[in-house]
Length: 327
Image (cartoon, rainbow, N blue to C red; front, side):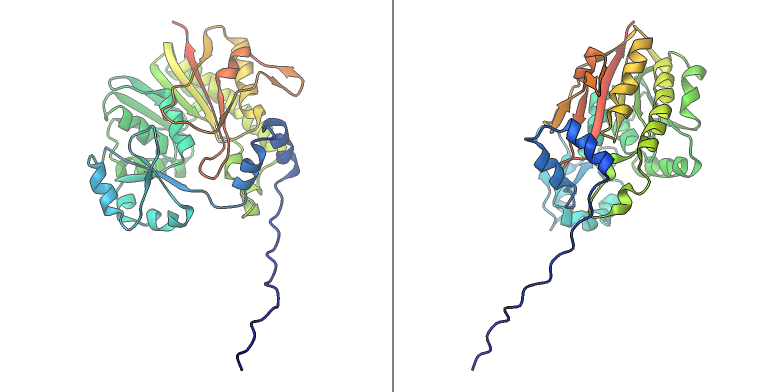
């Protein structure tokens, strides 16, 4: 007689811990109801892995893709050399020899978008004011074809040497690195740079995942406020370092308006020579317009030109604003 299959139920999966309530309140205030299910789902599963082929090391993109077999990357529409793989392929890609030799670089597409918004050109003088670990810095160098001058600033010694190693591995040779406090750079070299990227240190809300409560262990409303204070000092330094007529991109990997629109609003009310402008993006990204009103406070009307990239199954939370200094 054939034994009947067991009818006992499979063990229930443990419930995932909720996000911090104060952060959930931010999501409630920011995310339209129609988009909320997709955003919520992004915190409960590993994300797709994005990478770009590095032309400074691998000018033949087809050869790189061929060498990745049996991995089968999908091209991201609208931008050359950027590809996507399922989350389950992350380890294989991370440990691939092409990642080790700098032929490709694993990087979120929101992070790449900061450099696309900056649009650096060969022969220009460009400043990356908070450069480590170097992903954006190396993409700036690639956009500049390793020409012109790229200044990369990082104040933390361990991160500085990681930045240096990454740029060497990725074939960047037009960069000068500075172990320096970014808040003093504008005072030291006023009006020097054609373009400035400030991807500011932040409360790192983009790293949150319900799969790992440690991802928000150091987050608090106090950290948001402290981050905003540092961001304000760095943003003023970035503005001082920018030439008249130059472009400044301010970005964070945080959703909180206190670290984004509110920081920019304070600067825009102090200066009449700096104005937001539209973001030049080659890729359609899930994003909302910047806020012009937050929790009872009216903000600068041009901040509607900023963009808040939403966390989804393939994008991280990110905020971007491009500004031009009047000449």
